[in-house]
Image 1 (tube, one colour):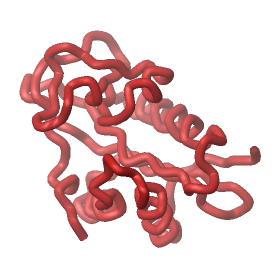
Image 2 (cartoon, one colour):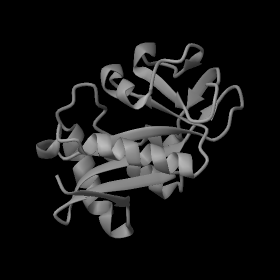
Image 3 (spheres, helix red, strand yellow):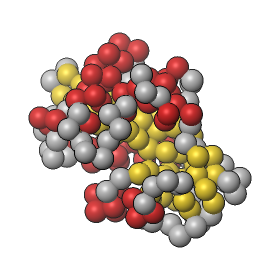
Length: 168
């Protein structure tokens, strides 16, 4: 596998949008709005980290991170997602490479931690786990996980950016 991970450029947006739509097209637990969410994050200048995985000059993966707010007042926490890999390139290590690169970039930027909504069996390999007292309203608690990058995990209710309500 010859994958390069780099920051997304403006020339990548159309390819990233198509890739994200394709990656979630057949996912039963998806809202099928992930591509709209990423574009809304861009428009609102809340897309803090946007990385692409490139293979043979084609974008095969993308990951987005944006700030979240926590009711306790904890700062510098981010939500990871969506993370997308082209369907025919899934289960080849591209998602893992994107995760490692995104978390390294978040550490470099001084992020305190990261939350995500996803399969605990997959994300535990990156250090994510359910944190008692840290919640996301309306989702089963076993799927909402966090990773502290500099110490204790805060307690409180997490709120994602308004862009996560995007439907087009």
